[in-house]
Length: 346
Ligand code: IPM
Ligand code: MG
Image (cartoon, helix red, strand yellow):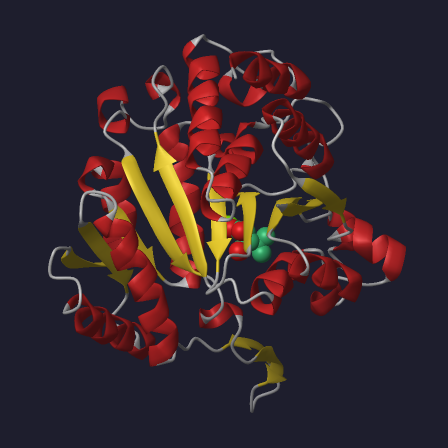
């Protein structure tokens, strides 16, 4: 398998180094390539997603992605900001389905922002649409008739976009507890009404899966009230972005959540759901576990290597159960010490 490593900005390179350690320890037949992405790519080439990086990704079986974002480039035009690299690569590679599992590791219940007994029940998967919505609609700045500045971003979904993510979500639910909750804002948004209609149409093909619907504001509330009620959640790009960060705090740390971004083919991109955390970059205190768990998802979904994926996940669970904690969980283990501990547990 050919894997492209895109470490990116901030803590990206530090956590990527730990994922690489784990990959090397598994001794799998893989070849590695590296590329530039984000602020580092902008500094070197003038663009956060250089064409060579996209070429390299297309020539790979999987992309392992660190994080992008660097406050030094917050002032540059939007299309050249580091964040555009991740948005651009998701669309360039047609990666429309984002899987964000959230589960409490045993021993971490006390670290959840929720009561331990509420947190312990969390075992859910957020399926977030990644190529559409208000993220990619027409956007800009204009002037109102009375001369005020007005920003706008158009929200839309076509039925095909909804249908393809619906199939991913229903299939994911079939592999779990067969309960799918579609999250929208159909009481206010036309985009959401179409979303809901198409979810119901597609559900006819999956009679074994129970489909329910929830408005996004209620979903945000239910996620902290009783997160154990959810199996698979399917939602649009913006709502999925927000709810997955919320889910991470229910689990204990955003440094623990991995994700897979998939398209029609085998090529996938795997990244922690957290960002580049420039405030702690270079200090050696970032939690590498979300990055390492993203490697597990890579081996499972693009590599078809369930055994290695499960081995990594078991090693991470063992490390956490042993009481190993980095700064995000109130401990003092460094980024590399945590990576070493996972390798030892393997
Ligand atoms: C995420 C991030 C990105 C997003 C940002 C960095 C553009 O928040 O992957 O959740 O909004 O999709
Ligand atoms: Mg986000």
